[in-house]
Image (cartoon, rainbow over all chains, first blue to last red; front, side):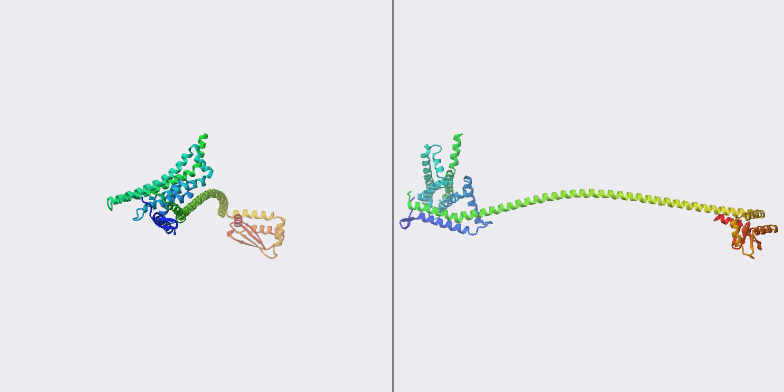
Length: 228
Length: 242
């Protein structure tokens, strides 16, 4: 994938097309949500039922892993899912590129997941208790814990970037080689892949966050196991 | 595949802004309305539970009331049966008493009827006896009987008590005739003997008038002033009848 095109500059910052696309997605999502949630009632219409079903499904998925901290984690994880799905599907719009096909975007998201894991872990367990789990079951494993944290973050970024970039690249190549209608099945695969990748990214982020928030109980369980 | 730090940083900022936007314009309103609906459902369920509990309480209450009614009904039935038994006993006693009274009344009536019948029979017997005696005496009446009665009259006159003699003498009005009626004609000696007996009885001589009266059957009827001496069978039979 080529480097993102710089459309204009805001002072020293060069605003790329990816950033503009992201702003567009943000504007679209914000406007849609504002319009859709202006007149919510306890007797929902089709649009409200769709929104409630989506949010309830996300809430149920989070509650299955974090039954006591769902409200804390839901905005972050749900926004990951919604944004990545939207960003992945943006590539289907002619003239627009998926922001998630850019490594800067996926790296930023992965960094946010990395930071949020520690943020939620420290908020949930406390700083000392949270850091102590890196020393369990043995301090010798501390480097491996750190490597694991870094590699899984890199893996998050590269997995999403690689899949989306390769998908767009393959569609582009087939379009160039075969003709106008041949990439249609591939575009349908693009939709499925967009949903799957968003699900994987969000679910992994949720699992990492849940692991961090439940690390103290794990440590305690392991300690009890070793004592017995 | 190149990392653009500006895009990288702006994407982080953008994502955080998007989190804020969606939190305020999507999650909070939608979760709020879901919570409101759940609250309404819980409220409806709570009301339904309350209604069910109230219904069960009412059911228990009505069952208890029905049981109470059943007990009251049984008690009322028992009281009614006792009242009926008492009323039956009272009516039985009253009927027995009425029957006793009726029996006594009928007994008294029977006794009275019997007495009446006996009296009527006695009267009838007396009447028949009187009729029989009258008929017998009528057939027996004759001079011989007259003579016997004459002798009996003289004997009665001589044997009158002294008190009656004085009253008779006082009742005799001077110069008023003594009226002597007989069933059969008296002979001269008999008239003289009777006049002498009356003179001896009254203490003075009064004129006597003799007559005959056949319905006397036999015997005499002697009138001295207001005093009348019935010495005949007719008056004797009447006396016997009375």
